[in-house]
Length: 481
Image 1 (cartoon, helix red, strand yellow):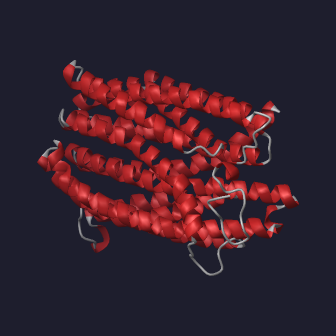
Image 2 (cartoon, one colour):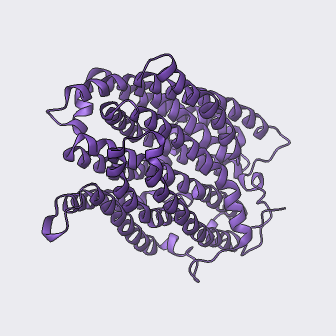
Image 3 (spheres, one colour):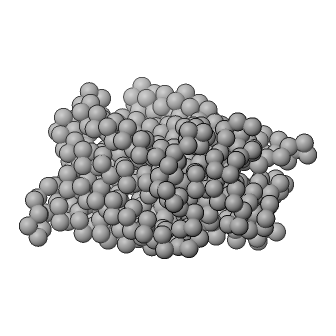
């Protein structure tokens, strides 16, 4: 039983983590290219990417529940007929979810794009250096349109994850890394007759790659017999009841993700007040932790889907073991990564700083790596807990507890430690780690409480029923019983 859980967790999580790594490689490549321009460009571009990632993360949160809803629908179909694709109710439900989520994604991406443009004009009023803001604005304007194909791609991704075919996106995103690096160079340096755009060229390259990746993956889905059979024959169509269901589950997730990204963005704004060197060092270390964080995101999503399936099959007794084994995998990997930070910090930082790094920048980044170790444990564990709760149908607990951990503990701690006590940039990262640590503890307590309810003999914790989705008609999903 124990070995089977490990196998199932890894089988579901590894492809998702691989996809996440490939996606983050796009922004990591962007950050590497910025370092070739100047320290100021690295600071400004890193700030722009951080704000872009915050909005991107919130957008993704709005459609994240689609994967759980698809998995729950498939699980119920398997329970009824033994094979989900032969169950007409499950087929209609999945098609409805896919079409409606595409429409919702379009609306959300447009709003987020407009918000990013507004951010590019108000950063100067948030204590940021005018020169840095002037450098950041063009890349933010170039990144904004890419939110549309990015979110369309994530809808298809959640659809594939829910169908347990997440690996089909990995090949596409890996190829996109090379395409992105090539376009970055073309637009930065004006190769093959293109205009020399500098930082703005990096944003344009990322947007074009997002569009290209979506088109290629859409073609890949259409060539997958199982996935293609579930594509809505009439194109994108939206049912009000289905959109309400997705939004009802997605809004708390988006706000939770947004709150998580916001505390990091606020920390970056705080770091910017200490000058370009601390800001650039923080951007580099934050990107390192963000790369490693993708492992926990993969574990969170994979475990969440596994919990949804398990709960849908009335096997809640196995959920506790799934959670324990997920944390064993996560903590083992985080320990190995932390040892690398301690033993070979220069090797870890060299891809971002080069062989002839600025001594002050190298020293600042090396010190922050110690905070990164705690950061990765705390942030990773809280994300896994959010995934476990989502698998049980609880998307609100993540928002409630992150509001407490981030906004009542983390952000005040950053301000107090960074400025009042005088710890400077180290105080900012200490407060950041403290916020994630408190949030992780709160979410774990909530998961234990929900798990006890799920394992109660009087409860039937089907994620669909928890989300008020138990009774569905063939072509629509009703938000009420």
